[in-house]
Structures are given as C-alpha cells and as structure tokens.
Image (tube, rainbow, N blue to C red; front, side, top):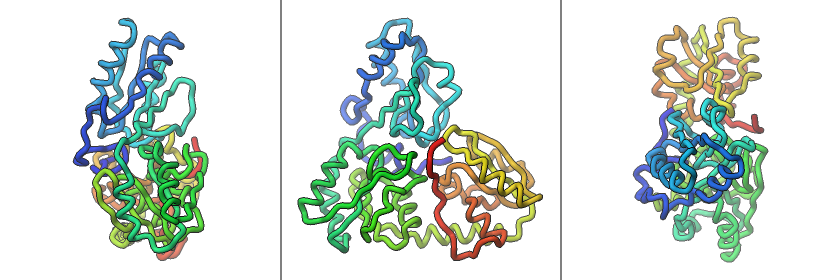
Length: 344
C-alpha cells in the first residue's frame, strides 16, 4: 500500500528535519532498560515507512549503550500502523520495539515508542478558529501530537470554547485519538470538530463517518488550514461501486496482518455468494492480484488499501459495505467509510 507524503508516520516533504536527537524522542533509555531487565540478546526495531531511513542511526545509538553481544535487527516489512506488526521478526527476538504508533496490542515483548512531534500546534490552531462556527468544538488528533492534547484543550477553553473529547473504543490508546481506520473519538455532540495533525486522510474519514459535522483541519506540519471536503472522495468510491455492479467472480481478500483480519466478514460474503473466492495475503498490492481472474475484489483488511490505492488495481476494489451495494443488498446512497472497531 502506498503512503501519502503527508499522512501519519511519513514525514517526507514536510520541511521537518529527521535528526532524531533533535526532532524525536526515541526513548532509548527505556529500550536499554528493557534489554537489560530481560537479558535480551536479539532486539527487533520496526519503523513506519517515512522513518525507516532513521533506523540505522537509532541502531547505532543503541549499540553504543548496550553490551556487544546484543544484536539489533531492522524490520524491512512495510509498516503503516500499530496493526502492522512484523510478527515474523517479533517471534524471533527477545525485545521488539515498534516506533511511531501508540499501543494497540499489549505484550510484554513489545515496546511502543510513539515518537511525539515537537511541532508547535498553536499558531495553526489560531488560524483555524476562523472556520469554527460555534462555541462548542470537538478536538481530535493523531498519536504524534497526543503529548500536547491537554494543552490544546486548555488553549481552546481559554479562548471561550467548550471543548468536547472522548476516548473511542479499545483500538484507541488515548482520549481524542483518531486512527486512519477508527474515528470513534469524534462521536461527540459538537457540530464542529477540530483535527490537529498532518495529512487529510484522517479528517476525510472522520467527515465521512460524521457527515453532519464541520471538520476543520489544522495541520501544524504543513502549516495550513482546510475544511474536510468529501465530495471528490465520494465520487471516486461511487465510480468503483458502479464498475463492480456487473461483476460475477469476486475475490474476497483476507489480510493476514495481525491487526487487520476480519474473517467473519469474509466468511459472510463467501456464504452468500457462490462466485466469491477467498484470497489470503499479508501485503495487498495491485501486482499480487493481477494474475487472479476476478471481475472485482472485496478488501476486508485495512480500509486504506481500498481508499488510497483503489484506482491502481486493475479491477474494482471495494470495501465490504460497498460490495453489499454493488450486489444490490443495500441502496447506493447508503455508502459509508469503512472503519475498524475493537482489537485483535
């Protein structure tokens, strides 16, 4: 799955320096302490795509702090979230460090280092106030900015706003946190929601799931304020559904990544459609599906595969709910954003 340059975990073209000793806290002392406590000899390090370049430097720093008999291994597997753990490497290490995301699957072996951003969010939040229509506002952000979340709430309250926040379901670690697949923290009464963070995918998904809300995007990394507009996105999704309405043979994709499997949804489709075939894979890419003789595909894994990369597949790629529309089980105007709830 390709990664948008302004989405969470990928800091390319944002103007930020990637000198980890300045911009990011890699929590090296915590990692070294865990290594010593467990007498670990093999340590796995997993970085999100945009920070893989920093992996060797972090490994060098850890080597200097640990005994010579400790081996550090860098995961080369694609990583787009805490649902995307390199389980092969994790099983073969004594300590496994996952950088860039908040905990989703607790384990004594896994150390999560969220890599909080040091970018000041308040100047762009000031600019965003012009687009907030009422005096009540919901506040949400991504894991990288959770270290300033309470300060952001206080800042808004000092300017006369009633701030509404909540913690979503068990897939979320923090109050006010949103993921690319889960916006339960925005399920609040306020008509305005302020999203503080980089990229548009998260707020677009939020606006899709809560179409009655005014979603204001305050991006402190790219220093821009925008309003989440789902119209172009919706047109793309409707076009994919229309293309799949005549499909006869369906490939039903079950993603084997540890936090993305929804077998019950895949099995339901297979049960109801004798022309549906289960395809299991870890990394879902256009090249891997090109040799399957299918008319359309249903992705039960990460919704970003469908929404981000959908146009790159040679046949229509739908979410489970879009599939139900295409086969006539639901009306066309019921189209919703695909979200994950709960944990493993």
